[in-house]
Length: 551
Image (cartoon, rainbow, N blue to C red; front, side, top):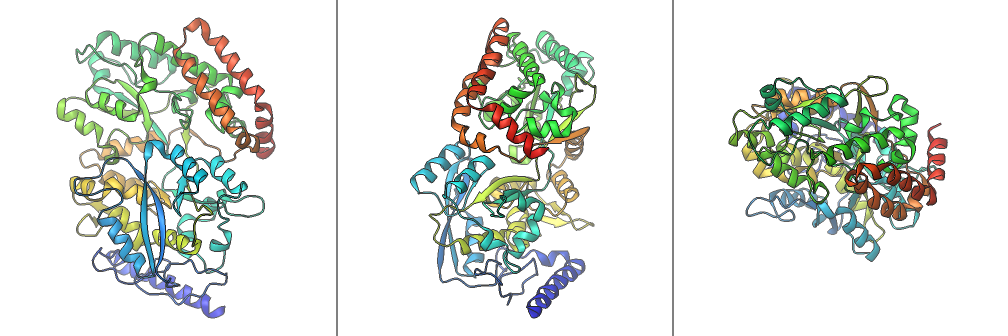
């Protein structure tokens, strides 16, 4: 045992020394990377011996030609000549995993149908060996029902999954543990917890002589002016692209933080904000937010059929110059993953400008409250139909190395990026990268959300490099997304919520769109009716369980 610890310590010291002397040596090319790595230790194959029953650190064991299958999201964005399951990066993965006797094949799932597809595959026992889902309640429910593996025996041993544990960290990993210390999933670690921005047409504000709105009232006046004075002279302007809770997975939304009572106290927010449905039941301010959105809808300041659209519809309207204000993921206006929308808009209208703004001030205390993600993203889990969990975890461990996740995400030094003076990857050609790797890199890197980065500072600097000509937009986007008092999404799921999830979903789907689109005189009645329906499926017990957990 002492010998094992000495070997690991030497490997770690070697890795650090090599990185300090020559950062570029830590990233091998697709053609020349030949040997397994352990704990990001360059190219040294390990003689680590696990203290558990399974060897899951990449390089510690050579398997006997094992095959595993992996879920991958299909966004229908593959370049010509490639598919999401057949491309140069899939080939690279198989070359590297082939060195330890593991073969991989990928199962494509449409991104827009991820939950329904997952539920169907789990119910029929046809799911791949590695699956993912963003809902903790669904995944933990599968574990309680005996449908997925406890991963603790494959991860918790002293020499097991060393790269995985080092990259994700205990704080993030333990989110997927229950009171018995079972590990029902691997939570992907977020590189940043910033969540969303409010975006607005700055050129329209300037044309109308308007200031950036800071309050709910000012935002309403700006939207009225956009529609009435129509700066670009269009007849199809949509003053706002707000689209509130039309899908079950939609979060409460940053705009709602200007109305919520719960955000004033962190514990109260944790109790009340397990989902948008929790807030509608517990926080009168969320009801006021929906009433405000209802007002925008009934005054023609929103798309009258917003509920049948999606993000693609919004993007099309945006690049056509129809939308004046919207709320979406942080950095959405210039994010290369989303197609650099401002760049496309400016190709048609060089004077157009869309910026992010700080969140609106809360109507109760005048403070700015901002939403933040928890430290985890998707949950990666392994169904009981998997025949070799050891190999599956070994793949996830490899994804946590620089030869694995770093290369899949950032590419090859000299081809896709170079290092700046601080050792941070700087892209060489954003157009080449977008076609060659960026379209698939997020969906291959399962153990991290937002990419392979060690620190948030590294993430923000690299992200700015990836938007040449728009670096200041990126900086301001992340600044605005972290302004004010941050209230992060809660990670606890009430047991009763898991039991009643189907009934709650039906009720929610019935009422959320109605609250936005109903006649104003019907709003209060529908809201009360909504709450009574939730009470009838045990919502008082759900809030009690959340209160007991957080208090």
